[in-house]
Amino acid sequence: MNFDRDAWTFDCEPTLKDSQVLEFCREGYLLLRGVVPDEINQKTCAYLEGRLEAQPCWRPAGWTDEEITRVRASHEPSTLFLEDWFIEHVLLNAQLTGVMRSLLGARVGLPVLASHHATECPQGPQGWHHDADHVFGPELEFVEVFYFPQDTPDELGPTEIAPGTHIGHHSHDIDETGVLASGPAGTLGIHHQSILHRRAASTATGMRHMLKYNYWRTTPPVKDWIDEPGLDPATAFYGGHNTARFTAHMFWWLCGKGDDFRIIGGQGWPWRSDQQVGPSYGYGRTRGYLPDWRRNNPDGYAR
Image (cartoon, rainbow, N blue to C red; front, side):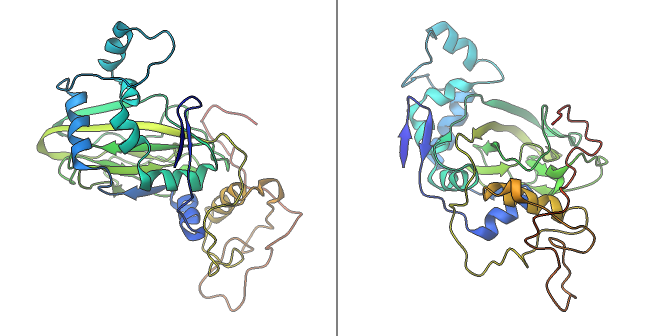
């Protein structure tokens, strides 16, 4: 692990294989359950509840004690990023950093803003939503993390994710269900910031803490994660109709080949069926079409 405090970046060896990177492109999320040590989870809860004295190991230029007190008391307690124990065991968690290095390349930019979602349970389900300022496209310039510092079973209303909804605008009725990111204390959820999600309904009693923050790309994309000889990009599973083309485009972009990506449409690559007697046509074409990520999207961005 190479942590550059001045540049606020880290570098390490990537830990994901081809199929895992492809899974993230297709599903939009990965879960690391119970990977933060219990002592750190307890310290995080105590810090958020004001029971632990702040002891910053560094401070941004111009930040006074009063500024640290103000930020800590807000719903964006980014002063956690100034605590050496939080940096070492949460921001630079060994299992998390390998994933981020795989998805975001070398010299990953560390988070600069934390959002604290504190819920007194029980509560009904939140409405499904895409986060503010989400953007749909093949580029992966940042990845969002949510951290549960306490045991978060289904009954405590963990984040609920709608897999595959990061590729375009979706709407779900409140009664529709998704994947619950439940787990023991120290669970980290890694997801595409544009994915549809919500706080799930809770039936238990107690405080549910969740911290949300982003890691950032600082270098151009290149395929340097763990090579998986058994995965053939010509026959890999990218998803079904109206999904596969977007998944493949994102994967190609992460491989540093986004400008070369073209499809022929229809039942051509990257779509495929297990009932095919041969590979899909169209793999490796240099002429054809690009997926339309801007199709009626209300995300407020333009090319």
